[in-house]
Length: 215
Image 1: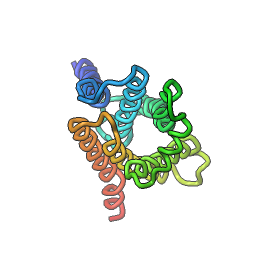
Image 2: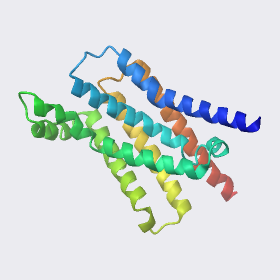
Image 3: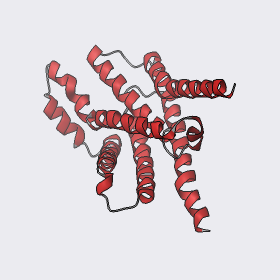
Image 4: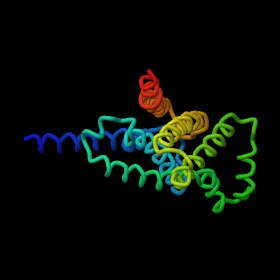
């Protein structure tokens, strides 16, 4: 009986995760009133949006979510967390290039000109936020790949990684809401809610825990 209940809880957890981080964003994208564009542009938009939302799920696949350790084998959870990170982060890192990729198939301004203009428009808040988020994302990727070469303890690295992830997701969320072509009210609310949940998890895990430990 306990085995059946445990299996059902796992299925429910996976179902809810897929619903929140994949199905809902995709549904909002499809039902949005943004003018339809080419298949290539829509495909790139969907890939980027889903990659961004899946990143939120990374907080649930970390030690910030104590519940998951009671439901799943945590060693397997860590493997999934790393796998998702290695897939999603590269997609978001090349996101600026994906924005101008369709220019290769259009008449007019070249992709290179569009790219340079896009990343040097410093009077645009969305661009500035995007550049900051991009830099933070690179830092996340490199520190994760070369963690063993950093001269810090595992505990210190986990705190560093968690806080850096939170700062990144805040700037990235702000950037997406500010500039996202397909970001309507419903998707904005979902992003804000997920950002708040991520913030609470990080603060609870790394700040409150350390304060209690100091006492």
